Amino acid sequence: MFFLWTFISCSIICFGQASGYKEVTAVSFKNLLSQEKGILLDVRTPGEYSQGHLAGAQNLNFYDPDFALKLKKLAAGKVAFIYCASGGRSAKAATILKDYSQAPVYNLIGGIAARQKAGYPVVK
View 1 (cartoon, rainbow, N blue to C red):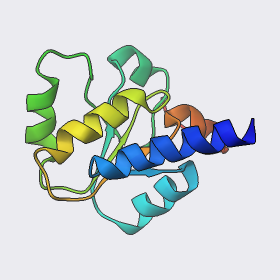
View 2: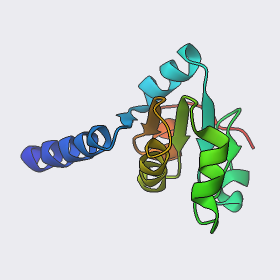
View 3: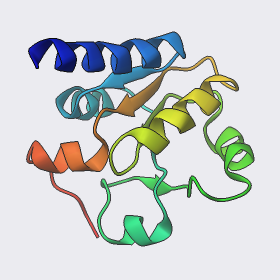
View 4: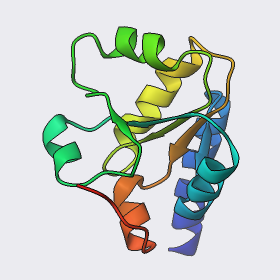
């Protein structure tokens, strides 16, 4: 079981790094947000966002047909911190953004659920 978890964890982290963005834990995400100026993006649906989000986050619906274009206009060239519910959509968004930007992009491993599990608050 340990081997399987290690393999999955490494695969996720290595995938993010190979795609040019960095996968970070809830603690690292919080620390980086306080250290670097950048844009904080919640790529969940507006309904999910309204249920609770990180303070200062802008909502950009991953399922919007113009998502990639809006992402490019909003975040290209800026340090970006991206999250979703559990990390899947934000990883895809981070990959898209890295096609447009040389600035660092950070994806929250486990999404907002991981932040809440770590005891960090959300706002409504």
